[in-house]
Image 1 (cartoon, rainbow, N blue to C red):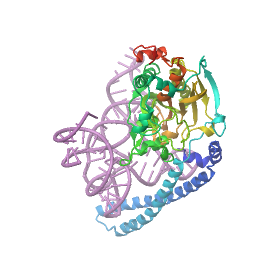
Image 2 (image 1 turned 90 degrees about the vertical axis):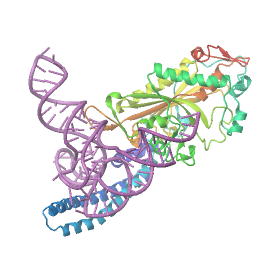
Image 3 (image 1 turned 180 degrees about the vertical axis):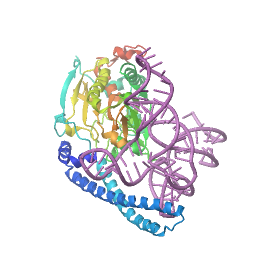
Image 4 (image 1 turned 90 degrees about the horizontal axis):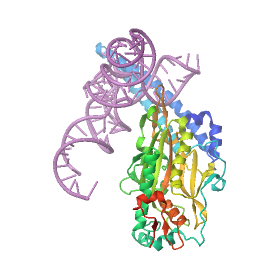
Length: 425
RNA sequence: GGAGAGGUGGCCGAGCGGUUGAAGGCGCACGCUUGGAAAGCGUGUGUAGGUUAACCCCUACCGAGGGUUCGAAUCCCUCCCUCUCCGCCA
């Protein structure tokens, strides 16, 4: 949520920043400023009357104690009360409208990120590792998994529908190994505390991180309980500190969490229909940070490095991309994507997205901290995938495939797979 | 699901119709004391909004939302959450 004061005082620069997202919010900003001044006006009227009322009520108390008559004071308060009620109604009406508008306005993009409408303007920052060479035609992960009996997509469709998967035998084992490997690296080497949060969250949590109110159609909703299945661990983990006051010396706070993620994928019907790339349910190890404002830029770089460390340990070829203003998610001010090489597709595919949200989520979720001396301030929140396990599964199969259809297991993963060196028939 | 208890400031905890934004304690900040530290003593210390150049001032806030009253942290209603006991259950 943006600061209404910032909108009031710097309407033009806010408008310009938002326009970089390929959307025109100038009408909303105008409406907000009008509502804001209307609100302050009726608030002022109400407060003046309340002040008068408080004085009168105190007089009544005093007069009654002295045994004097207070009828005229009591009568005046009664009539004032009605007026107060009218102003208060106007005030809260304005406040509600302001809030509704603010909740639907995205974060301001970082001035340093590139302009652009869509992913074609994203900027490649660096490419890491070597593109694997094959002296045979590399298969895609679906063919490989079928050959080795790692997946059962047909039965998954029977059980649940399209975009679901059953991992089976070595496939299930490999998925579990990847999750454990990632959690171990993030907790033991990169200093994250592990959380295992709920997968169903309430409306307030979804609103704080920015999924609601605007993106409800992307979420799975429980019919009878007004709970939502999480689309990412970002939601429960960021909300871990909702409505809290943190201490300066406990920052930065770093959490990692494994959760399944549930997404309706509304509007992506034709895309990635084959295999594991785009599923309604997938697994992910997430990284979340709460930091002081002046640290957040540096902490984003460290977060990306922590996500990258997984790809490096597994010897996968990938690149780092900074998203342009038009391609970035609603709540983010700056986002780096990690894209892993997929030989069968012959391209890089997103396997992690790491973002700095500035104080945007902290405002929505009321997450503050207090410096040793000074007033409460909003924390900055960050998060990133470290990494998406389903897509990592795909990358591993495709990049480590052999001519006979077997999969070489990279050494870093072997302790999690009974020291086996390959998956084969 | 049934019965009961409770939710007060960064934390603990009093208050149960007017002088309470809220006693007391802890913590924190500053000062005194000390060779230094601890202890001790003193002073200060909630949040949000409005207004202001700033100080001041005003308003609201004692889980949330309504109600009663001239006046509510205190009384009433609804909801949420926590705890205890019973039931059910992986």
